[in-house]
Image (cartoon, rainbow, N blue to C red; front, side, top):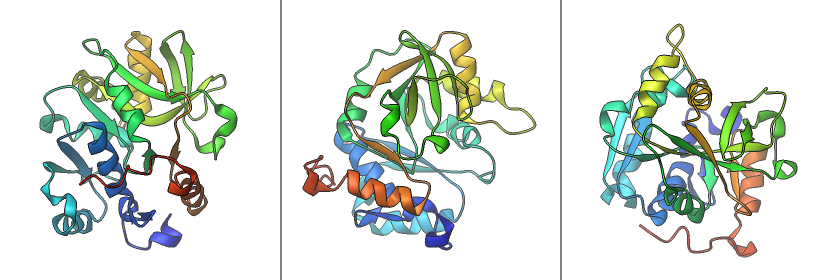
Amino acid sequence: MRSVSGVRPKPLMEFDGKPMLEQIIRRASRAGIERFTITVGYRSDLIRQWFAHCLLGRLPVRFVENRDYHKQNGISAIKAKDAIDGNFLLLMADHIFEARTARLLMDQPLACGEVILAVDSRINRVFDLDDATKVRRDGAHIVDIGKEIPSYDALDTGMFLCTPALFDTLESAVTNGDCSLSDGMRRLAAERRFRAFDIGDADWQDVDTPEALAHAEHVFDPHRGLESGDLVHA
């Protein structure tokens, strides 16, 4: 996204007239989330400045600094360990989703030490399959995850319902000071502690390129009748 974002961090890129981060927070808030922890890294000063002056400033938000933001996303998740003391929804700052999907995911029963990932089994509808993280299921359990796995039957939407045990799992997966979320999830999968929640006909989009951004704006165009009320809650 750097060709169009310049020095701005990607979460501040506009989607449907508002920064993507604002869209994520508003949709999560509409789904019932009341407190937020945001891990920031690259140009975190701009994100903090934006938040201080936007209408969302009334929401309880805690910022966690990740000075190792050049590393993989598992490290960003680990940085929030001390800020979270209960079950939580883990979201990506560049994945647009429907509020009802988050709401349904949070309604799923979550066992101790478990993680539930919202997945999309409509593989033929993905915008950029090469870039998507794939998953393979065995019944309700996920048994493999990654962008390059040879066999898969669903896609990772970037929405995880987690217990705090996730942090210990991620820390155990760190190799040479780095790890991805998928590294930790594979460990959970091996222990049958990683389950799938199929989002059905709901929409979502990972925004990694200008083309993906344009596609997301088409998919979530309110004139198509999709969640027209999603962005009015403050």
